[in-house]
Length: 484
RNA sequence: GUCCUAUUAGGUUAGUGGUUAGACCGCUGGGCCUUCAACCCGGAAAGAAGAGUUCGAUUCUCUUAUAGGACGCCA
Image (tube, rainbow, N blue to C red; front, side, top):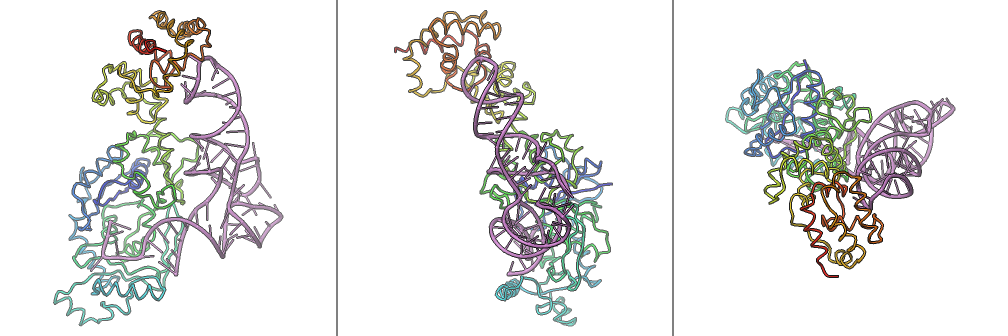
């Protein structure tokens, strides 16, 4: 039975990279009919943000990522919030001290800073120096006992073997080998008695019977420590899969300064959850076919860790926009109408009957990226107050006698009969143009501007038909009444 | 500084020890024609540099360059 977990920290909004990690876990679980768990890793009290958990769960729910076990839904392996499991970590940490795979250390923050500064100066990698710092081994048993008894601040560190290579297999990276001398003696229990990520993570993954740890690449370097911990406990490690980083267009780690990175930002901008999920699923994974558009279920069926790539994935905002537009073209107009009706009402529009709005959406959606764009792009259909036209463009039109003649005919002849179908309209438009000695092509663009105050839009026939004769007349008059 | 990783058209990305190196976006030519857009049919356009292994390397190895990541009593 596959059991995976997504384990965010409640330090803020859900990052788009975290959404990807959560999504891959979710897809993998569903693909294998396994269980997807949400676990809150709040072992750092100083970074806790009120309401962050609720917000993250809401963002995940918006994206369609759901969990079978977690603090919000319960389960057999709880509690699912680490701050509610503290006794456990202390107990397991002590177990390692007793079996000799971890040890007490008493160094102060200042002493550690000094040590790192010395190492930095000497040009070597900063790493806890077990042989010179103040710990169980340098102090001796009696002194250690004494310090402990008098309640001196101390931590518990992992005793990393210095002369051994740590090996593990990663489903994305392949075989990974790291020499013990490059691994730091990680703190497992902090001086305040709280566990670090490493200890809590390993203990919980074991207790929650996690089979696959799917997480971001930033965890790859600390995985050897986790392997060592599993070994120290005598536990079987899960399978690891480290996902490539999500990158800014300049290839640096994706961050705020290059654009939106929080899921809430994307929601606000008007992306469909389907398109964001579809796009993000392709950041670091590909199906091996040329399919790019995937429904939720298709994603589940196609996903596999084998097809996750090693190279960092650059987040291409333009491609995301393109994808959102594709979804906009494919969805149900009536559903969309229901979604934007409240917005349209708020914008003060008068022609927002549900069926009418659905028709407008069908007509205009090929030209915009976001559903909400329909509201501004279709202003001339939803209301009778038109946008301002560039004065020079307008005067070019009003001073054009042939156009004036053609549109005078157009105004006189416009009727429901002429709008019965596209051919009739075409014929009618041609005759109007002919009366003025114009080519019909030369008349159409000006006519569009006169009627919509825009030079881009749906087919004119559709536009006029949707507008109806009565709404077209005043707009034609507004043009014809201007003195040349 | 140490360790690790990546580098394919303008952008995002597939694939491969022998291929016309594929796709989407963008660009461009044309069609349709009721302008623009959309749509349809075409086109141009790519394996960082060097060396090695090999009959043959974009693919494997090494070096260099560039970019990134990790090196906390953060997660």
